Length: 640
Picture 1 (cartoon, rainbow, N blue to C red):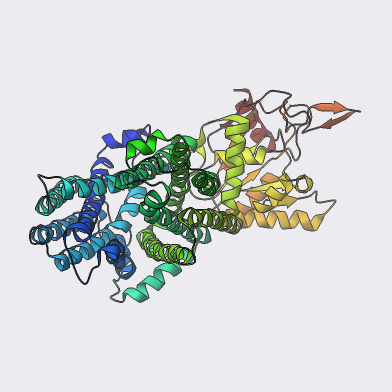
Picture 2 (spheres, rainbow, N blue to C red):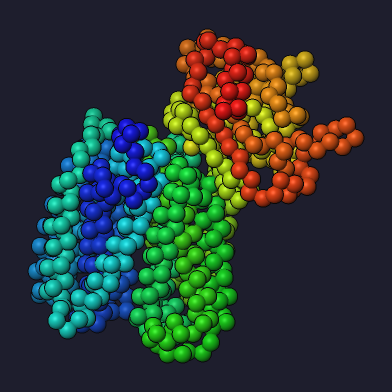
């Protein structure tokens, strides 16, 4: 793990660092080689070579199935290998295997040996199966939390660009007059050699579980991997969310040729152009995740992406219904028809939304998974991805068999995506809560955080902040890359909408001991349980929202929690925080009516997109604190 001084300034700066650049080049070359081999072989058996046992009409489907099969069969074993051995050395052994496969492919393409090439496709599927868990387990070993989203964005971008370039190169080499099948074989071998050269520069990555005993039973190990993933619900449900993304994307990718021919009345150039738009859209969405998430693992982008996926998939159906009569099969004719641009816009925004949806989920799985079996959890994800992609083929086939058109398949997929998204976000409220926080800090306020690095990356801590408005908890939630549990006055839970959000976030209601002693004691016990679990606990020690903008006296409840934690042997740092420029905003108490302070009236009383901030101080030692010293620390931050 790099030190803070070595942290890349942005995701593109990673390309200049050895801990990422050779890995990225290896990834790019491997993905391009996979798709060059598959697509060139598909073109060969579809247009140039008659193979009785591999009919041209279904050749692409069978070749894709053979490539995916190793993911189902061997992902569990590959996860074990990635946890047990040095990941860099394992990558180099996998690239050695790729070279051997491509030597076989050279012979297969030179002699038009379809069976031989199908075996090479299977072996390249095995190569990708071995590489997958290593790929995603490598990133959190070398990137800090603030770099993880950007690194995953680069990986997703590189993967889809490589898929696109591999397909285009395979098609060109098979159709250009001066090229042909033999040249494809040599191109595959050249890419494998370049990938091996890049892999030799990847820095060593020590194993996370060197004592792991390898299991020779892939089915039993698959089940164990799924059980490992289920051990942390937010991780397992994120795996399901990622697999759903592959289901969703596979439906569109598989239907592009039919959509181009039957609906857009275009030729293979139009179908290829749709693939280009889709790939560029996903790459753009993936790269946007770092800036939109302020360089944190921001899962609030996932609901935004899910919303875009459904919205633009549904609009693609309506755009397809309003197309003009065929204007010509070529790409130039297609682009000359103005209504077709709405189709392209829907496709571009749909794929961009898919990038926003997938990258934070990948980053969350890597960040929240236990390092000792992170690769095995990612292997479980590869198994689920393969199963969901197979299910997507069955889903599309059933709809088409029932007489649905391709646009109707897209419509059903968009509606189903909306239902799945609602289900996932109700199962894992953290996604929805982070989305609300993201909207508030990007579309309502211009929110700036100073000193966020002082929030501990792991372990228990108590966050102490001034209380200025009804949305203070949402702002703190947006500032922390980790989930935060709040201790809040029970009266806040009666606030419309916000009370529902607080209950959804598992905030802890607390009441005065004199008024409701049972609620008071239950709140302290839940707060201690939060710290015992190694989580973040946030407290507003003033007890209520300020009515005049000034910092009120701190109540001693926070010190009692710290004393009980110390008595249990818990080392709990206290992180002081101060919200700034919130007083006078829509959510604060400032309006005076009939002698009463009220809030949430006249929404635009301070305009729109006001600049507000949060200052985070260095952690304090719990044993040396008093209410006065803690209040002074928060006051100094507020006045800085």
